[in-house]
Image: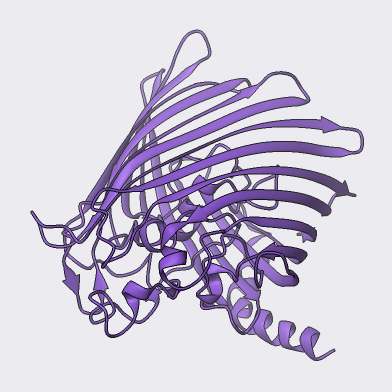
Amino acid sequence: MFRVALLVALLVPPMVPLLVPSIAAADQPGWNSFGFAAARAAAVDSQSSWLERGFGRLSGGDEVGDVAGWGRAEAQLGLTFDDQASWRGKLHVLARLESSDVVGDPVGITEAWLNWQRALGNRDEFSARAGIFFYPSSQENIDPLWGSPYTLTYSAINSWMAEEFRPIGLDLTWRRFLSSGDELSLGATVFGGNDTLGTLIAWRGWAMHDRLTVLGERLALPEAFSLEPDRVFGEFQRAFKTTPIGRDLDGRPGYALRLRGERPGRMNAQVAWVDNRGDRDLHGSEYAWHTRFWLAGMHWQASDRIEFMAEWTEGETIMGFPGNPWVKVEFRALYGMASLETAIGRWSLRHDRFVADDRLANPNWGLYDDRGQAWTLAWMLPLGQRSRFGLEWLWLDSNRTLAAQSLGSANTDGRMLSAEWRLHW
């Protein structure tokens, strides 16, 4: 009862100022409110989670070979406006109840943006979006609140997007509607507030989860030896914490460019280039990282019941003064997934591979090589019109050199069996 009462106390007060106007607005033309409440439970065999300053790549865990229980309660709310002409807007907030050992915020904003669009003749459309928003790249996170209908745990690529990349700025899109019914679009984004992008890839390595970072949230860094107070990085970096999405540190806007082709309802393919243009310097207690990477993805609706999708990224992240970086890591990751809709729910199978290569190889500062692969099998069962049950098995094979240097184990393997019940409104 105490945990239930605590959850109610956590979720209700922050939601009240949002729920009241949204419920009233839901009866007005153009306004819509939606969301969900979910309870998650899992058995995890892994090192202690990165959320608790460990090197484990999954939520929960204690040590490899020792199964531990993990749980979370969460509620998310979206409020949208659409005047059916030129203007749209969205506010997305969440509240969650996690272990007291998790470093992070229980309540916060994930998205808040305003969008304007206008037809240009019979075949073209232009739109501009300003605010904080998810970058439009994911092939699996297609639900209205940037969730996935396929799995409980996101791919390594989209786990990283969820935790470290949320543009705060302006996104412009030009779309051409072809006579064949296909669509072609070009996009350009100018953004700030993501200067620490790359921190987690370098010091923690890749991870797999579905946890959305909120605006201004401080996340845990692993207890790496190079971040200890008497070491070269720990002397300056905020102790074992980073703020992925928040105020701009260096005043240098980043940019992204993308090209997308789509046959609506059948397939799409997209390629993008992202460069945060971080100046690699120390700003207070946070370093700005210069991170740039390619993103590519495709989705194929093979039939009414069968879908295939894949995504790939490759790039580098650098920290330290120009001409003499202290950390330089090249990274890449990819996944492929197949999903089948049946009379007894949706079945999805995904395979992930991820790599990070340390290009300086200075053992006194840390060795940031990272290797891993994972298989995820998920079953999603609708329960009526407003609820869903999910069951997932995840197998992860990986190693992390920095973990061994920090007097731990380089073995960062993981196994997780998780279940979730979700109620939509």
